[in-house]
Length: 257
Ligand code: SF4
Image (cartoon, rainbow, N blue to C red; front, side, top):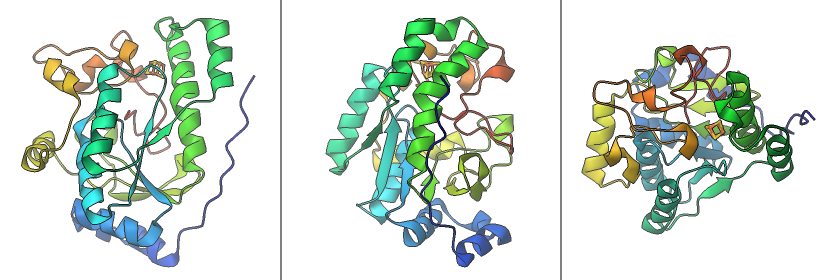
């Protein structure tokens, strides 16, 4: 049975916010300046999306925590995350003395999907994989974002071709017009890792085992030397199909989590 659309309770962006987005002035701002702007304009209705499966989100968590120790961070717990990711969530919680908002899928929707299609439906077809991502990731994210005015992500332009035009601040029409911050859109992987080392930011232990990006356990694998960093996600599909819908919209951005 199709789920009903999430209820959106959102304040419309103020004129100053819309002006900053329209002018493109944020393109010259540092990640810390963008996060400071976000906290100033939206606190407490702004939260950082962190998958705990890639260093980008953890770098932003560290930056945002330094700006505002009360800043909010959330993770989508699909029910299929590896133990290493759960361990990292608890490590970060203790290190920063910070509650992590864990967002779960609707248990009834998961139960109905598994009853009809099995636990590992994602290996059967692209449609089944997208259905699983839809129930376990997209729907809970939409519901969670419906209670916020802004969110921040670790998207970077050089991660995939489809992210090449990612602005640092935008109106996210895919999620009902919420303001979306992408503070490290213009960073390289090397800059991310330099920040991790400089600030001793905790990261997922599976990176050391060849996983550049860690998602759900059955849908992530280590990559071989020379392979693209995204090759370990949904590797049994053609590359063009690898979208989970979280960052996918009319601007053509692909999956990020
Ligand atoms: Fe399901 Fe795999 Fe998507 Fe996780 S990544 S929600 S297990 S299809």
